[in-house]
Length: 264
Image (cartoon, rainbow, N blue to C red; front, side, top):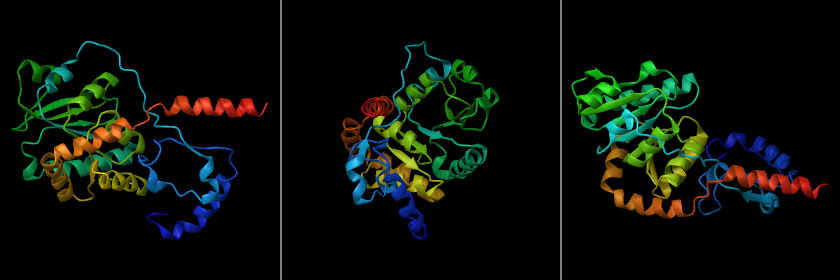
């Protein structure tokens, strides 16, 4: 409804159905740190039923030996570019990214692209002259890379990449944004696909946690803005992270169990 006024009648219908619920669980942090705020349209009658249980993002990271990829990216400043979703969404995101990569401002901007596809043939390292290497070869030869493409990151690899990256480029997925901004305190550049994404990114932009970009030129500008005002973003992200609730799954299960117990 925030961006499609003609959906208002159906919104009211859905709201009335939701109102029949005993409890309404929202997988987000409580206000004023509710990232999906602009996607919520609760009528006044149900607000007392709403419980903000937290994000579904808590994952255990194992203490494993570093992979060649993790060694290769150490001591480098880079952006983490995420491709997610079904094939059409993933491919569309990739095409948008490629348009950005071909701009002259990106000649020296290092990036790691996660394709979210379990296909090892995607894995490659590209140097500034466009020559490609395997990850192990690039590490052995100490290649000054400009782009690394990865089909699928392990949880440990993703954790390392998020810890080391300067910023992350995402489509505006609620779970992903929560993991990056709340879990890792890193600014995002959001290139939305759906209205839901746009609303999440707009919220983050208003809080100086990230930047919305819908055009190629805006992505370039967003990278410059984040680098220029990095301390401002860091401060806001630190505050957001302190109030970030990650254990939504556990909280939801506990509340559901309580409701069932009360109905016995």
